[in-house]
Image 1 (cartoon, each protein chain N blue to C red):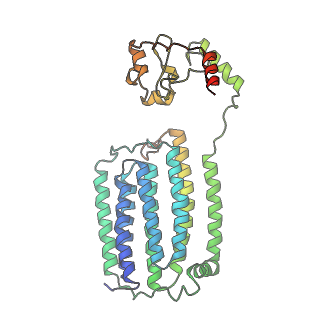
Image 2: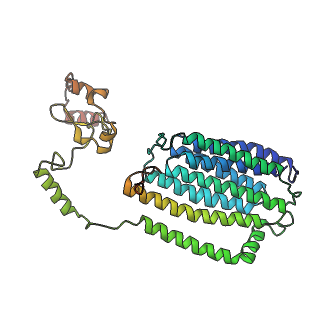
Image 3: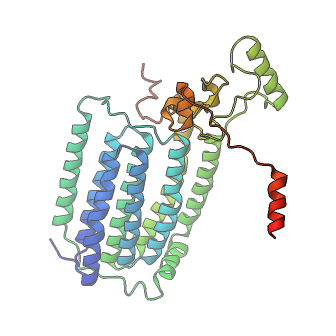
Amino acid sequence: MSLMHYLVLSGILFTIGAVTVLVRRNAILAFMGVELMLNSCNLALVAFSRVHGTLTGQVMAFYVMVVAAAEVVVGLAIIVSIYRARRTVSVDEPSLLRN
Amino acid sequence: MTESVVGSGGELVLFWIIGPLMVVAALALLFARKPVHAAVGLIFVMIGMAFLYTALEAPFLGVAQVVVYTGAIMILFVFVLMLVGVDAADSVAETIKGQRWIAVALGAGLVAVLAGVVLTANLPPAAGLEEANTMTNPVGVAYEIFGSTVFALELVGVLLITAALGAITLTHKERLSAIRDQKATVRLRQRAYARGEGSQVLTPAPAPGVYALHNAADVPALDPEGNPIDISVPRVLRIRGQELAPADVDGHVAQIASGTFVQPVAPPVTDVRESHENEGGER
């Protein structure tokens, strides 16, 4: 089968993730959109690894996974601490620096 | 467009089953009202992704995907969702006017650009991974990770420790006041009662439910005159408006509330000793 299939699926998932980040106001949902984008990039990396016949792409995907885990931990900690201080998880509410 | 064909027909079937399902599940992120539904959709996408990795001759990443993403990251997401309140509905009001349509237009543009790039790309014929996977895929990946990228691996280790410490620091709550023990709690309660604030009674609030008739937590207890006692219902249920009026409860409780309850006449009591003797005689 053509590996193009995987790349197109990866592009579609990336776009859904990006639109989620732009549209949803809930910080947790926006964050899930970021995760979806990272995942779709991983899919593209693994597909390219197969195109080139080397494992480098898979290793890159592995590192992306690890860094995503670290990023999720810190991001969710920020969301929780904002929720504790302001009782909201909306990305619009914390606008103290506006004026 | 160059076809870079590799793999079997079964893989094509697998892709066409899982791929569209993944796209549908991913759309839950955009359209689900409740964050938990979106999380379930994302979990589905990630498991589907693990299938595709395995089909792409990367079984190690497939397993790591299940362990890391579905097992750790999504659990963390759901955990935080529970922590901040599952009912935290997404506000639909737009802060920037027309933002949603701009976002959708940008998304469509992104799809067009990515599809254009992918479809016009001049890829080499796919090599496949049979050669690279001769020592099994995990061993090959391990050679790559611990061989040529070992410094990056150590950097990632540092990053993980930093992230864990950062999360602990961010969520650590400084205790601003001393811990209130039982004695202090009772004192505060008595003072609030003396000022006329706080609870209506000094003792613990009466338990909900009318025992022997109805003991669910949303039914208020009845006082001797048959009037409901509001403080007997847990505060959460009262705030949510899930408290039941005694008249809404079927059976005797409603009758008591409306004053039509008639105490049933007890059957005549036979002498216990006598009946016991009779039983003994029969034996």
